Amino acid sequence: MKEDSENDRAEEAVQRRARIATAMGVVLIVTQMTQIGGEGSGRLVDKVQLGGWTLWIIMLLLFIAFGGALFRNRSLYALLNDESSLQHRQQALASGFWGFIVMAALLGGVTFFEPLAGRDAIQLMVTFGVGTALLAFGWLERRALA
Amino acid sequence: MDKADRVSRQRAIVLLMLAVLLILSAILGTSATITPSRIGGWAVLALLVGANLAPLHARLWRDGLGSVAEVTASHRVARLIAGFWVLMFAMLVLGIAGDSWNLDGFSGFHMVMTAGLVTALTVLCSSRTVLAS
Image (cartoon, rainbow over all chains, first blue to last red):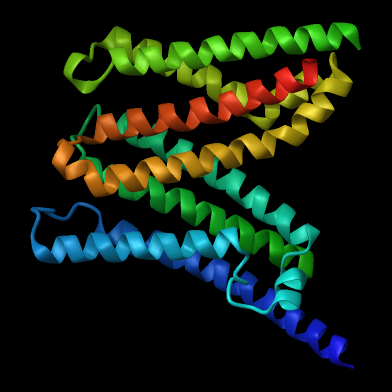
């Protein structure tokens, strides 16, 4: 009985995780795209913004690395990180790598026509890499659940 | 099988040389010393490395080197993951410290792409060397 309820909780958590991963990927890419090109003159507000962005990225990386089950109990953690989930995570990270490379190549091309600040370039690459990984993870999980 | 092992070992050596060349070309092509030929050379090397990492490459090799390609394919995702984490770490460091280094967009892209590709390629080489030994 207890095992059944734990399985149900795990299934709910997996569905929620797939939705959250997709939503976070979209929100990350959309919000960061709108923030590129600011003055970045070293004001306090820029430093706070950079700190917030770094923290957000670290949280998202922890989400990917632990499959969103970091603060769950041991048995639920194991259920949430089964073999297929681990495989999805690995595929998502590989997609994130290609996301990085594609965005880096695009930005490299852009710098020949328009000067680009280093921080903006890095922010775009990280955003696109992590966003791609999240979207891929969400899509793979949703496909497995369907 | 022996032929496959030999070819795999030779490929690992070639890829390792590619990685070294990519690093050298990145060092030579920093924004202070940039010339079209240097960035062109770096771009060709980066493209070669990228092509070696792509899944398409594994499929192309599968015909001639079936067994090794199968095992290598299982290492493909692992090396891309290593590349992902190195890229992430490099970018977070550059993002935080970039202002004090006065980093421009071109140097950022150049350094990050070199670091990611070289890591992924080195992991690939080590996995092939293990296979061949």
